[in-house]
Amino acid sequence: MPDTFDERSLLKLQEDTFGYYVRETNPANGMVPDSTKEGAPASIAAIGLGLAAYPVAVERGYVSRAEAVDRVLTTLRFFWKSPQAPASEATGYKGFFYHYLDMTTGRRINRSELSTIDTTYLLAGALTCRAFFDRDTDEERELRDLADELFARADWQWALNEGETVAHAWKPERGFSRYRWEGYSEALILYVLALASPTYPISPDSYRVWTSTYQWKKLYGHEFLYAGPLFIHQLSHVWIDFRRIQDEYMHMKGIDYFENSRRATYVQQQYAIRNPRKFRGYDEHSWGITASDGPGPATRRVDGVTRKFFDYCARGVPHGPDDGTLAPWGVVASLPFAPEIVLPTIAHLDEKYPFIISKYGFRCSYNPTFPDDKGKDKGWIAQGYYGLDQGPIVMMIENHLSGLLWALMRSCPYIDAGLRRAGFTGGWLAK
Image (cartoon, rainbow, N blue to C red):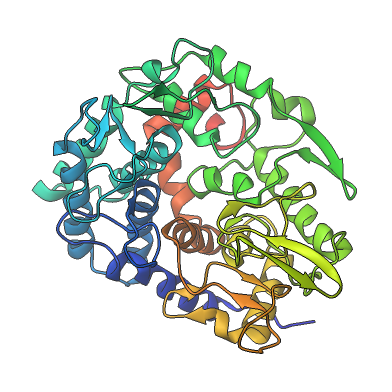
């Protein structure tokens, strides 16, 4: 059994990972690239996660408070002043923002969608900074005011598109997507913030309709609220402390969302141990199937089996897609839920795949099954990093070590109000 990662090693990983947001961000406008791939556009999800990482960085001494305030203000000022219009070349509309933006101009790029979930992460990052930067200075007061104004501008009632649940996306060319946030997903924090809006709140009935679409399953001896990709069980937990608080659905099941994520983490490990598709390298210390880059699209004959490999997609268990690609970030982001299996897995990665660690910590993903053209026996290793991956590593290490993000957001009036309107009770909400 591999040794576990100690606190010093975790902090080194955290600091290296945070470096992505320091060195890859455009300092003129706060744009953070979706990935380190050449020509990558900015991603508003990566920007939001980067904002949320700054309080951690200040507390750990990775950047000064003054530098963090300057960087956050640059970002928030840009989004507050950027064009909000139905025109295709704007930055956003109705208080929401396009998923991908030009790194230089901050305007919509690649005909991307106005994304309700990615805007949620951007707003959550702003609200994290609002909670942390609480000093009575001109800069920090402005920062807090901008976070409030950006949050209040998002028109969640419009995003319902005359339905009961929130729409995924909107484009100026064709209007709303036909897809809505239904079924358990990473949108848990989306509904909490939409319920809490001081200007355009959705009804608690919308939340109840959403939870009515949940699926409860039993896999490998674990009963839990099902979602295949691991990130679904993690991203809302970056900000919200779900320990010992329950909505009506979880009250009926006798657990909370934190315990649910712990079970989902164990399901991932058990799937890797069973390895039904017989991929190379899967075992109790090699798991983590989630949204990640991959070696495809490609088809290869491996060990007498013809296999299809995918590029970036949301992989999941047990029904797939699964092409043998594992994501270190997905493992680390489960650290608060199940450190007893996560820490040995990180140590195993560090020992067996040292070349998967580079200047910004763990690379996005690896696939031991995919043939390596260079003749190495370790398979395929992603060459880049994704901004969406980096943030959960930074924040979930911190939540495991100190609970900083959870403590900050417990003090956020919008999180408190949204949880209560969703029907959450107990735990820290009872205090």
